Length: 468
Image (cartoon, rainbow, N blue to C red; front, side):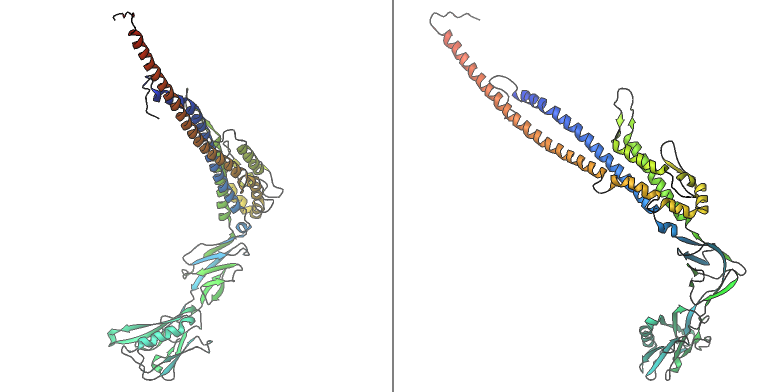
């Protein structure tokens, strides 16, 4: 019926019906819009609070770790010569080290043979890694095998032993080639030895040097142990990765020291890791405070304009949460050495955030490292106490999640109310059009009747018409 203007009455039915519908619809729409804005704003604010609280809780979990305070560090003053790591059992100490020689593995070459070499007869190459390797590995070679085929058979058979073979050609001396074998395992008496009853041209004694004239033997130097000194005491190791010389400490020898120079190896608590986690905790707490301040403040925007209010202005949940956390932060622990955050150089600023005095914190870690650990960790430590204050808010089904679920339900209900309003307005509009069109039809009929009566009366005998 929309769009029909009253013909009989001359009334603009569309305009009248539209005005009446708007008068019915507008107040309810405005009410729902205000409710939706307020609900959405609060829902978003609680989400921001939950996010900041989750980050704060993660930082507390990282700091509430016994492993963090049990960790030990091993620091080398010259990482190009030596690097090190320490287990939690390592005792603090400082050591002077020098590396005289690195452990090396065996690398040998067979005697020079023609590049077109082929085995003259069947034979077995027995490869051993040092004199203690009494069994060795037997590699069967067939008559006619080329040097390439011998190489491939060696690589297949010696893979598990950590020995690899390759071919080095020397075209300058008339086209000769050598098999070169390299071992992974380092240490003295780990020289590669190759023997054969028939293929003697491929035999190698890894304890003698190869010659430039093509004689078999080791290349560079024979396999040797690492040699180093700790506080003047000479030590040797078959590997460049050394464990057990200093209990709980493992270090890797990387290069030889300069003659007459030593490096310092310092073993101690992981003060750097603890400091990083304390700073992370402070940053997360400050972010929580900044978030709550933003969500609860009222900002004036000038005369005549309504102030801008945060989504949680006057919210009791925020007040209770912060009060609980702050009470634990200032509540002293019942222990010696470190009883409060101020003992670590952590103080509260005027805006409620925390500030770290790095110098005081460093000194506290140096003098009372174990006390710092017990202050933060354990069932009665600061992190556990604060976490208990936070848990009821952030856990599944907790205060924040329940409130957000309630707000989400309100938003869903607003959508349903809008649907009901639209349906009710459409029904009202249909009813009004029906009523006004009926009225318009009646007015048209009455107008026609009036015109007919006027015409009939004017035509009656004896009726005198007045000229207009």
